[in-house]
Length: 142
Image (cartoon, rainbow, N blue to C red; front, top):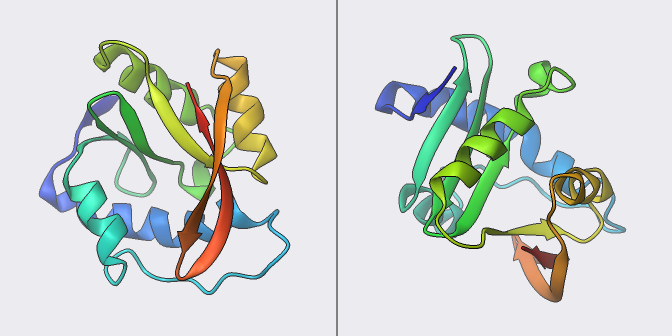
């Protein structure tokens, strides 16, 4: 069941982020140093300015966050990967968005790109983002 984030979900969101963030950058040619969400002022502020929805129970938690037409975050707890937790959250977020949804993905994260393409997203442009001061080639998908 997908539900609206409540304050007591925050520790599990931090845990899922911690276990997942570097995973999305695993295909990059450089190594990244992990920066916790609590210390990443830019990403924490971006998350706090969104509508957050969670999927899971007390032991695992996946979450997605949106702001207007932008899907800002979609993380699946590593213990829940391969169990279909990503698609229900994405479909839920898409149903909440009026107009064309957009999201950003590391260009090297081909598993995520394939997933988003399967549900109809297409790449519209490339840009350079950064994580913890290190450049990341990224794409916009709509």
